[in-house]
Image 1 (cartoon, rainbow over the protein chains, first blue to last red):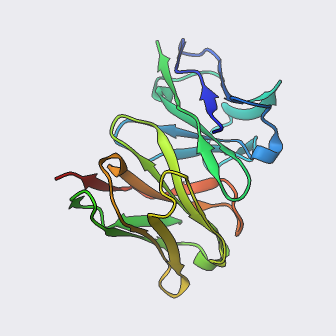
Image 2: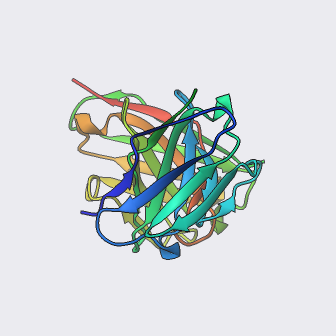
Image 3: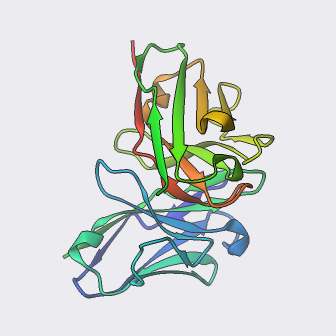
Length: 110
Length: 120
């Protein structure tokens, strides 16, 4: 059973930079997993930020960027703003049409 | 503008059945794979099932395999999820999500979700 790992929480100062990661319990994340990132605030549907590692979804500001860092996928938020305070989820493609989400990272801006 | 609208979520007893629907607009429905993703109360996102743009490929999470069936009607721009043998742990908001290609690829647009509650 493959587990996708994310930091449970992160805190960032307004204007600061934070990098969230998305890993695998066994093995390395690469572009073949099509890592993608979603932002969700309480009571709302997820919003797509990044897909296929580093493609920014329509309307997403360039403060959000995706990459592969070492053996993990990463989402960086630069110039953090108050409304970036959300839950962030990554998802990885496991082949044969199967996707697995990470447990999510709660980002606090303070 | 891409829009996805789910419906069908209700309170159902354990062991019961339910069919969810998701109507898409603003894109050529038959050209894109689609998925269902759920979120139990206070929990994270869980991918449930997906279907290729042509409808020939269907995929399921182990947690629902054999109980849920995904399908689509391109003439109605509608995605379905037939849910049977429902359990308390199936209680969740169910989102439909459009994928970026006709084959399984990441999700780009999401609906607002429909709540399924499984309880006596």
